[in-house]
Length: 182
Length: 171
Image 1 (cartoon, rainbow over the protein chains, first blue to last red):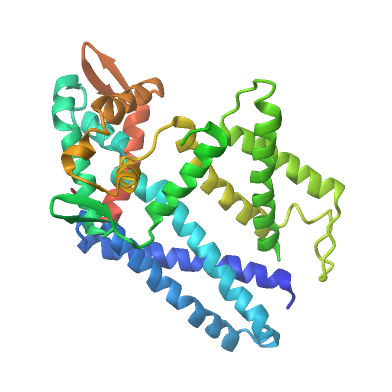
Image 2 (image 1 turned 90 degrees about the vertical axis):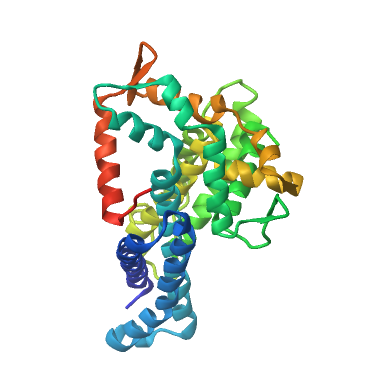
């Protein structure tokens, strides 16, 4: 087996792991509170990541061609499967899950859609989606996932690294490069 | 190997985009949104690598004929592009998520009370702008101070409800 076939194994393994992540995510989320979704998403992601070296070992045992690979190529397989899996998970979290769970647009659309042909008045919409409610909900979610800590009535950032901080960092960089802001 | 190539392609494309935006597009006052300019650069990078630089590796399987068509490179490069599209759309719409804005505000002031935090947000910026966006994109319509859902909006809602149902998500 050459490196070309190894690449295909990497792709298939990452897609398989991502599929496993989606199945676990669909099963577990039936029992998880909406406030804890982000921390559970991380736990599931970590759980599947731990499986990757075992998956590599399984392939080593079952696919004879794998046994010809050196330890470096084998580590490459683990590293790139991990990278590809994380990329798929990251895109899913940012582009699908995050949008459906927290997007204000989707919440508004849901609200308007529920009224069907009657429609909903601007005033009612404004009362239901007050700034205070929107921000409180997000602060609750951020404190539950330990991204923000509340002490003595003050909110401050926790020291741990997170998806959202990375998101913010990349976004600020893009602003600096292309929109000359910040 | 292909994955390493696609990462290098992607990094090179972003640098190329940065260079072209800073020194060419801005000089000729040509306004591109970030993602369109990225696509432009990605195509140039692809043509450059594929046509002008035949790539030969130790496996001899990658050459300038089959290299651009290889599944892994395209797959990985596309994933990076999608990720980049998500970020650049946010930058283009000048529309950061409220959670990211909260983190940003707290990060800048080190510590904030809820009251101080609320000063950073207005209803116009958080909700009204989004209603206007949805109206112009044809998801909803406004008649006599009332909002109604349109066909495009109800199709999207059906898909979202199905997704939420499969995950058992409820408020």
